[in-house]
Length: 238
Length: 99
Image (cartoon, rainbow over all chains, first blue to last red; front, side, top):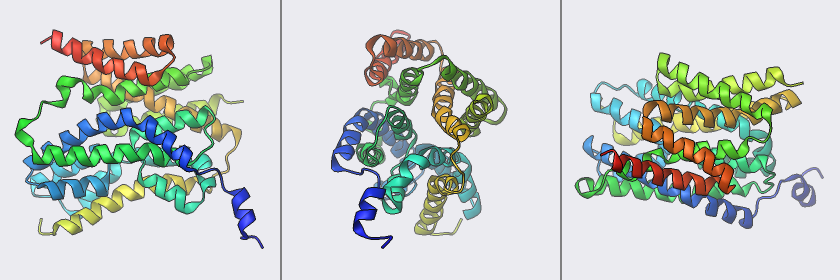
């Protein structure tokens, strides 16, 4: 009887169309910046000899701008092995280990199919947005997938446009779109600081990121910031 | 490099997928004590602070001013989304003014 329908219904967390729609609405401003990033990746991919189809396939399969740019750079050298490609993406996207771990207690209760399906749409921007909502009491697990929907559309459309129309576009930097993720990070961080104790992970995260970026480059800096903030919060917790 | 594009794509996609699900899967075996919960709650704050700090470092005066404006505007407007969008306008304006 363990798997009877009523049991499943009460043990599963809320996952509704309403939550999905709320997430999608919140994801639209982020999707604008992701669209601009997508144009940027499309431009780079086109210069590396990718056509529109290949560029869009890459954006759909990897779905991570920083990892894709590194992969295209590696492929351009002509000396990339499959292992080097695999390892590069693993290192650049190592921060997703942390993102997934932080989401797990909340997302798992939606059930495995919904949880893993939602993780496919996980990115830096909507992870930040979802974590902020979770902390503010969001119960609907469809929220994460909802935020991913407009972002995915923006990412793929941007890639196609960038790869297809290289020469006629204004540079995203001129419009300030390259700073969009950082602006959202600064805003959401400010909104999430509710108590004096919250300033500790902020200070530790910023400091760690700067030191690690200086020593090892930007790829490991973000994951180091997250780990350091988490470690300090665990240490001072009583 | 003789591998075909679908093979390259499959290798890249599997690495990206592994990163997305591995942390999530491993957390299933970690009991969520209050201490672990405090750590997980601090993680996004530290990551956001890291992203902001790196953007200021990689950028310059315009980026630093824009992100400072976002922090101030979030407190004043009580809307982080509005503040972030205004921050983009600020940096575009400052870059335009700075030539």
